[in-house]
Amino acid sequence: MLDITCDFKSELLGKFAIETEYDIVTVRQTIRQFAKDAGMGIVDQTRITTAVSELFRNMYNYAGGGKVFIESGDVEGHHALIVTCIDHGPGIENLDLAMSDGYTSGMGMGYGLPGAKRLVDRFEIQSKLNEGTTVRIMKWK
Amino acid sequence: MKESFNVKNLKNRIDRIEDILASVAAGDMEARIGSDIEDDFSGIEAAIDLLINDLTDELRERAKVQKELESRLSKIQEQQKTILQQQEDLLELSSPVSKVWDNILILPVIGTLDSQRTQVMMENLLQKIVDTGCTISILDITGVPTVDTQVANHLLKTVTAARLLGAECIISGISPAIAQTIVHLGIDLSAIRTKATLQDAMIYSMKQNKRSEEVKALANISFPNENEG
Amino acid sequence: MNQYEKRIPIIKIHDYLIVPIQVDMHDKQAIQLQSQILEEIARTRAKGVLIDISVLEMVDSFIGRMLSGMASMAAIMDTSVVIVGMQPAVAITLVELGLEMPGVDTALNMEKGMEMLERKLNTRKIDTY
Image (cartoon, rainbow over all chains, first blue to last red; front, side, top):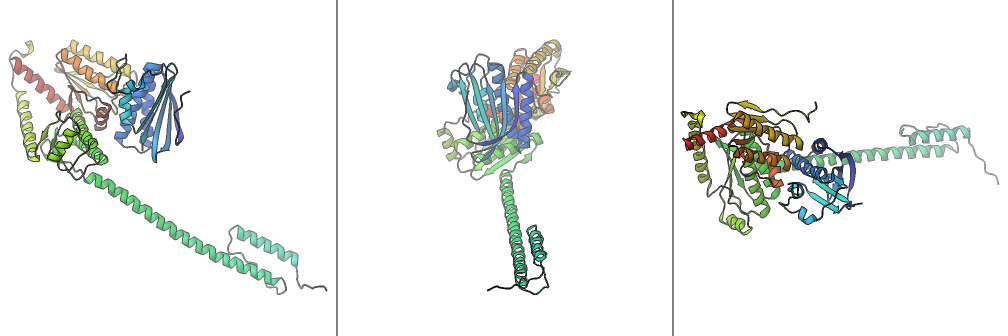
């Protein structure tokens, strides 16, 4: 449905579903382990773990859950850890607004998307009303 | 006219040539035909042996060259590793954090700050704060000629992150040029304690130390009826 | 009982409550902890709370907001909260996330946190004496 252009080669490391609050915790721990295995420093590990935690919470709260793909690939001359979150929720009506700092939706969230964007090296988002949202983030190793 | 050949045992000898060529192809460079029969066919056998000799020499030469290339390559890789390591070391060395007094850390920064160096510096300083338990640190940028927006933001981030750890970070030695840049860039440093010189920062830090000692002493004052408040 | 149901202990020592958070909390657990602490404050009439997060490898916006909300709520109950032992990587990430937690007191370690609470309590006593 939603396609974000793939301009890189990658290898799938894992595929997970976010269905409960526990999944948010276990999958973000898995991603920290992947980041550690990839040789990232402690600060970068924390950055990507925190960023995915924000994205997973959005999926859980607004779309009731979704799927997560973790890949390792070569992008723009960097080795990258790539996390793609796909949900089939209500979608985001105004992406620019959702990406602006200090914006909070009904549930008192906010920080989520713009904060996650600041923590990673590349951030792509696509959303269609009533169809869902796809977010892909990358962190260079 | 009919030519006559003087060849003995032709079938067996051709089989032997086949065998020898097969073992050479399989990598046995010692195999030779080495026939001691002298007739019209022995020339061909001798020529094949010579070719095998040449091939052996050639292969040996090639292996030698390859080995040399490999050793050069590994040397270059080794050097590259050293360069990378040194770059990292230099990055670490260029931001030495030292404890100069009870509870006080100093990080003197010298030279141009780029985003990467500031990042490493920030991580070092914060880690050192946690390791030493010092609650006051001075970031002295007297030796820094200019800063850009990104670097100024990193400095700001360092101070805020230090506060989250439970420590105060003071910036000293802001040159007129940097002050101008910071204000022109619209970066708000008002939330940060800045001191003109390292000396001022030291004096301030020691006063802070003394103050917390005094406040600590207050803990021993007893108040009557304190449980009825 | 798995790690998700493990209760986070709230320890009372003299006038203080000590809360060592030693699990990667999910959101419900964080909300539960918040109300548990507030109830303990009311029940024990504690004057200060030390929340030790030194083993937390990650604080995202939800837990960050829970902690700063905790501090404001305790403040209107006349109790001070000090967040103790945040890791440098966590602090850097929080700042980049945009969560600078203004108004929240922090300390490098338990000892310094305790000193800070005592100091606050004494200044308050001097003010009201």
